[in-house]
Length: 365
Image (cartoon, rainbow, N blue to C red; front, side, top):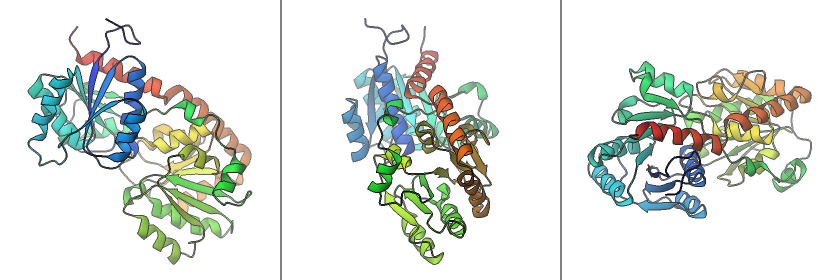
């Protein structure tokens, strides 16, 4: 038998995830699967039809099965997943997000396969209670579940990771600004996140209006799609900053787009598991400003790698961004410190190594 990277036998992991979007948690599930595959393991995805997710898996040579498993009223889902676990010979079922956590954990009990439920945000414990172990993407999420009564001994922190090579050979700042039709010397801020109320982009639009009073040529880039797109465009018009707020939609070249920014912002108001965009910004060497919320606090070391701003406070957010724009030397130091910390804590290799250790805990000797 061939051996995995840590010297143990290779494992077969059934990864279960059900959303139709391809956002933070979905990307992390793909990245983790790729990291595990590099370590000698087999990963098979069970998902509903999701073109972007399926394309990302195909690109990496990861197996996927489209199954009728979505919806919290889908009582057939655990039986479908149990059959799939048996079909692929799964050693472990690793679920991501709540619906998959509910049905994947039930499937594990039916099939006699140990389960790890991965929690990516500040969720209620309900959908994760059947899992054998629970992985949280941050200490903040772990604490949130402990407050609800979940046993701390059942939980393991599994930090998100990214590909360090994604951040090599990027176009330079000037080239990216030219590509995005931005002035070479204009202050540019931006956020990369699903456009939704919980991500707090409205406070960044309001902060942009405040900052434009001092920097009339300042531009704010909003990268992502979501239900708030129209509302954000209307808010920018109402505040007289429609020309400053640019909605770029979904981009598959986020690290390159970050090259054009002076400050990367994550203004979430709630339910942030661990700000992946802030990790990516750190690898690009950009200073970051984020809400002083669980999950974000673990990525930003306040005053060292970026600044924390009060939650849901446009004026406080504007002050923090202005402090970074005002001090280029400080901004450069923050970016470099953030890069070094990210290289140590937030790589796919580190994430896969940690996940593998958790799987070994679940398995009999």
